Length: 455
Image (tube, rainbow, N blue to C red; front, side):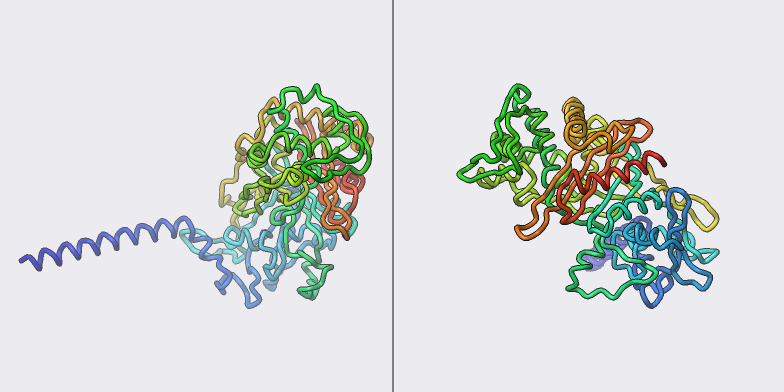
């Protein structure tokens, strides 16, 4: 009798475990079935070359960026410049660009649903409408002029990424043979806006300024005399030239390394880490499921190294999309919409297949501090960059020239935002080995912003 009871208990335990396992499987099937179906080895959805058989990618204006031809081949927009300018948003035929829509949104393009699986009545899959404007991408691509880097523009109210260009790039209709050690194609499959880290240079001074405003009570009463260099922690922090006597407004407009290096040391490593983290620069974002790169900042260093970290050099690296969101937060009173790439997705018959809505970030910066920094960044444009380069725009900006090696030309940065309810755009430009930030990256930003405002 006791043996029967023990066996009964054992059977009940097995049945309970089976039930739990079945429930877990059902949950995962509902939650992740689309990912399972879109796995690259599913020959129902992919051809022998690993190219997705179904799905159409369309930009925010209704321009088809990639679809299937009548014979079932993957084709791209007929304009070669558009193909190159949108490559990293759309993806390449072989799926090497992991952040491209063909790979990142394969589950949405495949036409999969719980009722019919991956079967599509018309055999064409779903349509995914991206937030990007292909014409704006064209302008950005042409403005880069063959230089490597990235350009990003997004609406900090809605989160829509309007422009996302990464270079080097190529024509997906005629992919080149790329040798692994060819420097001309270095990082060609990497979406530099979402998936790459770079030394930020002086655009990081905005974060140091944020910390200084909230922790140094007499900041706006102080004066500094820049002679072109200052000794901090037993070594020298240099500026390109002597700026003379400055207050904090002039120091930001002049991008004075000496002033911001001293501020970083005065604030200390804990405060610098706190504000870099709060700005969202050390975290990875999720852009419609695409996991972006997370930044790295090392402030637990010597005083001289901390000074250089405070001006965006040293061990600092960050992902451009994180700084883009931070710019949006400064513009928007401390919070910004999280960047997104999908406007909507529909079936063969035009029925919606998902809900895509605006999500807001955490509080990245205090609202009052954000307003103060915005005014100081606007002064940068008036005093240093030239308002005439941005006609009709209430623009706030910060340039950066990031040293990337003694034998290399510095990277050029330009980032900021427009204070305009009709065009609430934040932007970031990186030109690798481009030289001066305001001169080189600022020129790219001017062309792109004029096109964006005139959309």
